[in-house]
Length: 370
Image (cartoon, rainbow, N blue to C red; front, side, top):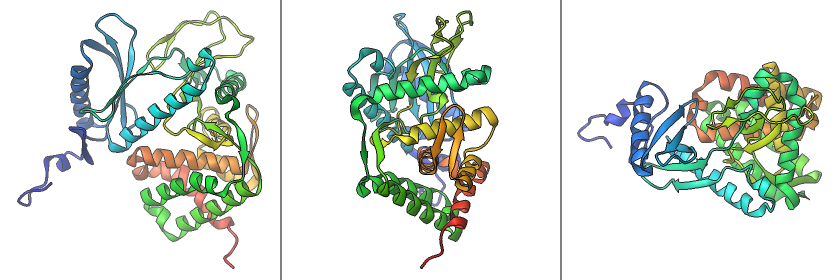
């Protein structure tokens, strides 16, 4: 709060929010100093140990690997920088706990990162998870793109097993409104362009198209990850003589025996956008769109616009996906990014390549009002 007409120090530093006793700043020169302070405070709370790696990245969550002083296995420490990030980690922690309680097979529960300590209401807020083994799928594909089909098959199999018997079908308009309402509101709230004439027309056309499709035809409903992309998948390579790799999650991936050329899934991470009753197609379509970006450099916006013009999205690894699933995956992707970090709303390149083209295409193809 400003006193006597003076600007508060945290505003001068570019801080958007003060929470949990910490200044919450975006990454940058000031952000790095705040992150160092944050890690010192967290270390004081967690006890003796040493930091082994820190991944800052383009995120509002500072992720670091820490090894306890007693020589135990390393842990993954997640420190939220903003209030949005705190809420995302709460959703992730709770979703994993509920899903793990429903999964009966121990080998499937091992794919989920266990929460070892949760102090998200503390000062500073922190979530501690176990470190899962494996190489992130996007890293593996950057080295061996020829594994894309096998990796996709392994990913879909693992997700289907985790869902187990939770799937059913629905045409419930109230459920559909729950999927769409909040996510569309995020776009309108966070992006000024979406409140203009063209953006509003695109959002209205998107809602009308999806609601009509999802209520007129049965939609498979089950546990959905919500951000199911190769980067949130951990795997062991099928090559027996490959040297060990170390993932950003912090644990070396031991060479695995050959399994007929198919990578072995060792973990699924980042469950902040999970739903117990979500549309199953959103995960398959998200994975397909992410493959288009990773393997061919085609933005999500470019791919979705192409699907709007052709009526579907086809990838050799994932097959043909309906337009409604592609639009759902795009909506999940853009709304989640905007909700987790306000920096996306200021990233002109991201808006220009991912968000604006899709809504413009929808606005242009919408039927005139009666």
